Amino acid sequence: MKNLAWSIALAVGLLGCGADSGSGDTTDSGTDVSPDVVSPVDINLKVDLQVADITDPSSGPDLYDLPEAVSEIGPPPDVEDVPKEPPSDVSDVPNAKDVKDAKDAKDAKDCGPAICIDCACQCPDGSMQKYGGCFEGCETIPEEIQNCNMDCAKICPDDVTGTPCWDGQCPEGYLCLEQPCTLCGMPPEHVCAPEPCPIDGCWFDWDCAPNHWCVGAEFPYGSHGQCLPKVEPPQCWEDAHCPSSAECKGAIHCPPCYACAMPTAPGSCQAKEGMEAVLLWVDDSYYLPGWTVHPVWYNLLNDTTIFLAGCTTFTLEESNGDGTWKNLGPLADCVWEGYAVKLDPGDAHPAMSFPTSVQEPDGFGTFRLRGLYWTGCIDDQPISQAQCTGGPVDVLSQTYSVGPPPPMPPSQ
Image (cartoon, rainbow, N blue to C red; front, side, top):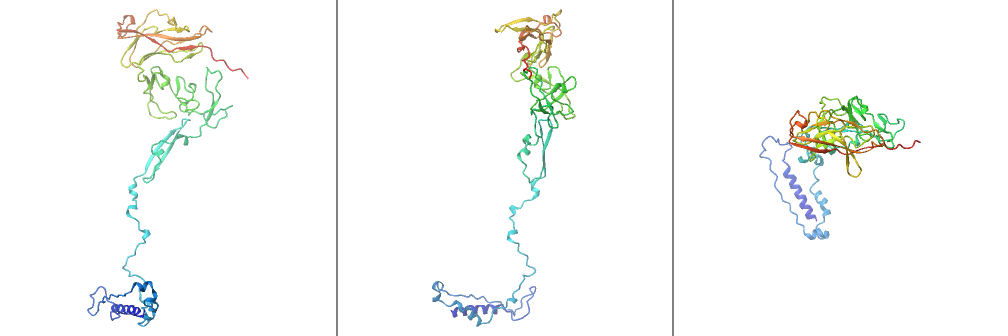
């Protein structure tokens, strides 16, 4: 054990001698090294330890004798001789936890500019509620805002439309109204409906100025309508103004409750795909005695002009109840047949209106209109002299009934 200690002590001593320059002056790092300074000699200290010395402490030198061996060659260097602070020209080593991988660093400029999205919902009361907003380039924009597809029920005011009401008891901004229904045996109950906007909102025709219609109202469960000027066929504002086989196309106007510079112009009734035909149209399917029927001719052919008789354009027929019909003749006596009525494709001609019979029960029954048209005729001539190349062609209207109103419920 003492042999090992002595070997270590000797190595420490030799290393100490090699590091001593023999002078107390410190060599200037900026000048040449003096030839008197001897460079340290490399010393390879080899200590042979057998495997048995490690596994069996009793078979090798006594390691506890090391301090005694060191004390024989002198004390170790004073700790105060070791520099406490590194030289000033040594840069600080960064803390490992403060070092970030370059791929993890994000450049804010790569996120792009702010994105502003402006969406809006039309609520059942006709009001427009906006949503959306501005988002920085790094923010995730919600899908319902990115594509303007938010459920409008989330941002519209609470909808109380259709809630029954009595004596006008509705929330502020709502009216207690009754759906007009002449043919209802029991009138509908009053319900709360949003008060239409004062600009052009309406629920019924009587909410509008004279010669205006209330267009697009969905009382009581939808939005209110808009007051627009009345128009004659084939002009229209909505599909309800056209026969069922046609649709209203080309109408333009400002949105309800909104003043804008958009021109106001009605559209026209055009045949739905595969429904091109000449129609003799009546505006309802059930009439009370004394109500007025308003027949209209529509030329919904794509490229054919038609001609109608100049005085009366239809006759009235009544059902016999067994599949046969009785001809009641024209509704007017003509002294002169008149010039033929020319209808280009897409045109319409309001025929003679007439009241239903007020005779009860003789006036009750099921009826239809029968009309005739020609093609290839000379303009500005009576049909009998127009040298028409086609026709006459029969046209039948849809059937309609005339009857009494439904019985009213007994009074309470």
